Image 1 (cartoon, one colour):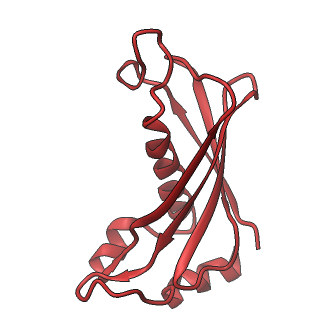
Image 2: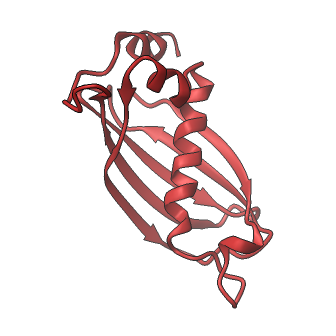
Image 3: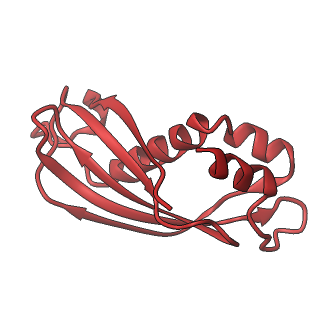
Length: 134
């Protein structure tokens, strides 16, 4: 199962260091943008999930830097669902600049938790249903 979504962001000045290069810590935020927009493309929002008592913390994050991104670059974040979710959901990412040059690759794993008990839970059925029709 591969469901892919592309999101576009422009590098803001505050995301860079003195040399105009994107600070490495900002890539986790770019991954989050990709992930939340991937969900939104299925008609699901974090706001809705939290409202229904589901939280989705990141339990693993990996990033491999290939090339620097700079202030005002337009970045395309490709978010790819790795496999059908169970208690966890895993995404791969590719970020390319406006010249289609690979800037970085990454991976995150998130766990579905019951917001009241903070205990792991299976992926909600409404998400699995959306994945079947995509």
